[in-house]
Image (cartoon, rainbow, N blue to C red; front, side):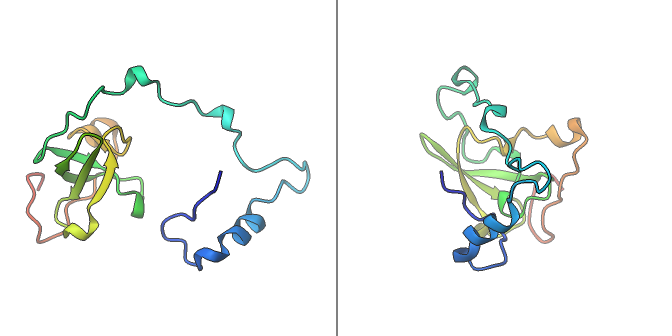
Length: 133
């Protein structure tokens, strides 16, 4: 399986394999890999996935932008929904920041999730209209 460079990787993408080689070396004392074993992670059960995309254009959500992940959610709007994907617009930002995700993404949450879970929400960029502000 190929590991892709993270968003914001500041070096040339062609140097990423060498970067991995240097930074993911086994522990010097134990020789153990620094990677978490795959068996620690379980896939989400198909029983927990909605059988079809129920998102509708115009619905408000809280979303995490993976490109600038800071652990915070942002107010967002569903601007397109197909059979398998949703397009998410981050309120207050231009549409160049919109992202497309499978409708089963873990990065879209219901409005109020952040408050209920004690997670800081990023306010919409100033100048943008939002029902959240």
